[in-house]
Length: 189
Image (cartoon, rainbow, N blue to C red; front, side, top):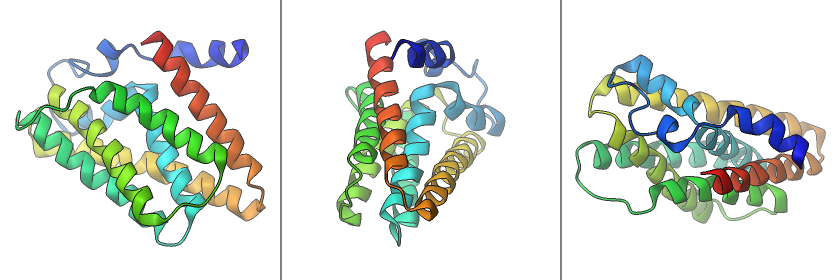
């Protein structure tokens, strides 16, 4: 575990760097695109969405990333336009990392609709975080949506490669690693 932490911790961003103000006031496509890569919590959750979608297979491969992206956009608008408050959104972001990691660790199929609903809730929190520090500009939104879709595609691609091997242990290893990283982030945040 110490070795894992020594590899992961140098790449973690503190909440102050990963979120509010991290874009130095820029609200264009490039800053929106860079934002999801600014925090390990965001990267892990978004890759995990793709992994879970690949594990569930079928329509979930489109439904889960789509639910995340749609809810993330809604959360972004709510946060950027100050339409609503989302209490504990940072805790929800960490819960998305841990929860998605645990779902992979258990490696048991669940119905697509509840899975998409939970993923959408996580996407709402991630979008809200983008919104409160960004500006309600199309370029910024397009940037972080594009980056998120790429991270989902990475997870989906990795998951489909694992599915071809027909060895669920790889999902469990990935899930355990993601959940452990989420717990580590929770303890240092």
